[in-house]
Amino acid sequence: MAKKSLQLLALFFVFISCTKEETQVDAIEIDAAQRNPLTAAQINGQIDQAFSNNGSFDWNQSSNHLLWSAIFQGNKMASIGFGSSATDFDRSLSPNNSQIQNEILAVIQQYEGKELDKILISSDAYLNQIDVMIEKQETVIALRRLNSLRYFEPADYRYFANQTNQQKGGGNQIQSDSGCGFESSALSASDYTTVTPNAKVPWAFYQHNIPSAWSYSTGAGITIGIIDTGISPNQTLFGTSFNNGLSSGRSISKFGVYVDSIWPWSTGTDGPNDQCGHGTSMASAAASPRNNVGQPVGVAYNSNLITYRAASNVVLDGYHEQNGVKNAFTGLGNNSSVKIISMSMGHIFSVGKISDGVKYAHARGKLIFCAGGTSTSFTNFVGVIFPAWMPETQAVTGVKEGTSNQKCDVCHSGSEIDFTVQMERSTGKTIPVVSYYNAQTDYVGGSSVATATTAGIAALVWAKNPTWTRDQVINKMRQSATYYPTPNSSYGYGNVNALLAVQ
Image 1 (cartoon, helix red, strand yellow):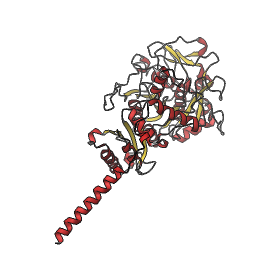
Image 2 (cartoon, one colour):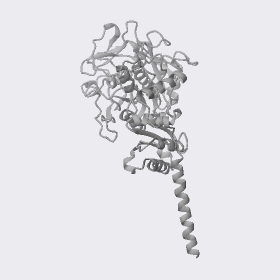
Image 3 (cartoon, helix red, strand yellow):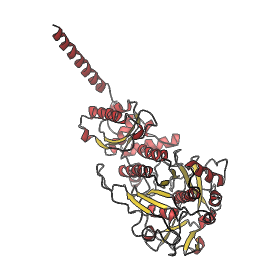
Image 4 (cartoon, one colour):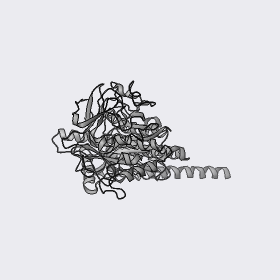
């Protein structure tokens, strides 16, 4: 009799358990008007409306229907950041990360009705972050009820691509330049000065007293990491001629973490070579060698350089672009030789996995410079872009020659800006750099080149004071700048005086 009672009790608990599970699933009811996903045009419209109303957009603040629609329209891929608190992003510091991840995946399996290998795309080795496949709106709603999600976002929704498609259809939508180009330009003699042994110093360097600072520091012993589109295989100044002339005793390393594929499960990268041109220009501004080949020299011409091909262009609008940048930040974060990271790419709203990567590198003492934003039609629509607005980064924008509060024609400004660089002349000319092709030159402008230039100045300061911390370097740069000690509301501390910064 006792045995029979126990069996009945066990069956009762099984029944109650199953009933609760079924109730949990059945409790998610979706209004008839929201059972179909929004179109890409409707999604972009809601994002634009958020910018118009609030000046920003955040997936964490979006409705369940909008989030699910963007996941659905973005190849059904989602990115999830999890943890026991809002700051729990580092796997190495998170003892229960596996348990939380498994709980999240169990919820997805329950609502999607699929095996794990059909759901999990990737699980980051260093961050509490996973990429998953989700089809059902019920899954989105169930996941958002969990307290362990730091963020939950579409992983492959392409805002800019959809805006461009709408433009082609006749709409008056905003767009952004990819930043790519393989053009070469002959330099005007008024835009540079030739110095020994036969290198061209860009006009803008004199506006920041960089040549005078070289008497104190040339960046020797400091490693700059550049996250961009890679480095040109056709430019020997970043190959066999990187370490010669007055640039000696230094090294360059090149990595590729960008996967050029439409398939999210693809993992093979296309190597470190620049296929855009932008990354090569940024490397030139920061650390191009000073030798006798008659090409533009970089700010920190004796610093070491590590370049990452992390994306196809400067607009971080797709899964592999965002994943590549995240991996570049964690890679540089884990490299103990790296002091400074420069990235002249971004997005108009936050990307959780990139934010995690930035925080990961920052937590390891890296000094991070990011571009405040460069575009034609975005200038009056969006302020400082992501991730430059993050407190873990130093945001940089470009200003016109002889000014510290007149942004360049295509540059963004805002309260998050920390420093500025004079990079646009009255003639319209910008900063001379080494071209994609050997023995050729070009001009590059915007907040992109301003960022790489500022990273080079930071290398000069750190090389002069190798025992300093990141905060000491930042403070010295601030003290040398235009508006210290009271930053300008839209241009931060303004133009850095490199000579004062290294004295």
